[in-house]
Length: 403
Image (tube, rainbow, N blue to C red):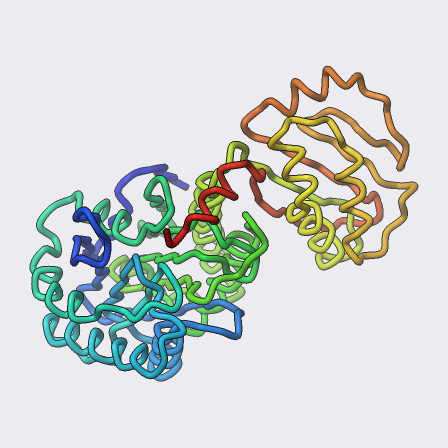
């Protein structure tokens, strides 16, 4: 599998671009468009927050009706959420305008927004910019970079990646971009993700693959424990690779799922690396579990513990906080079997401290990447959750978000 980190995520048969339409000050990019040259099969997963953006409702409905898509229009700087009836009317007007400019059915245009909640969307700015947005498609190889920059909010850097692999003589490519920095938690987060592939795959199988891939990637990241109102990950497949149609349960499906999961995991981890105020990237892996649920509950408990996250920021070797979070997970386990390691330093063996010298642990905690491994020694199941530390800057960023 060829993995192209931080490179142009362009996929054959797709175009993208981004520009400033005035939703943000100082001419910062805030409007993006992704287009397939031909009708594409499509699938999406969305936030589980009961308060959702009209854009989420619009895109859910569009996908449920046809399972096909030609274009995705995305704005940043405004969430278009909790704004009354105007929110859905704006979605209708924007998708209609984009469809007209592209000469495609309105039902094949999805929409997503990200930004401040509770502020009416100045949709007239998007409508005015739509013709230019379409004209910019395909003008430059850097347009994918412009698109990934246009979906950013508090992100410090744009996030994109691409993978490709060969199966039975056909080269299949998957490229994608994501955004997110804060309000990040499993079951979607304040994040948007868009993946394009030239694979031939039907809608049902594509949705299955996306669900499985996000379960090991976007749904396994947490920055601050908050789910957003606008989260979504959408994948489009235009069939340009001319491979035999991918079917669930086949070797072709397993290869495609591996590539999709690899890409989604990369995009998800970039979100954690860019977590608001984050100074450390943390992987919490629980293995030796009886069930995946048991392993996940424990991994998530450690990853979301404010006490663990602040200790990691302060590089404080207070490892008892980790074991405390294990016990708070609401999952049954045998404390006398648990082993815990931090960056390969054994802290706990069979539930008893190893009395590692504090200075050795301090040095381990000074690393940018922290790996916490918890072995329950009770089975073969495992789970991973990716998180970051809590810093002073996280509080500052969110205390001043709208001011």
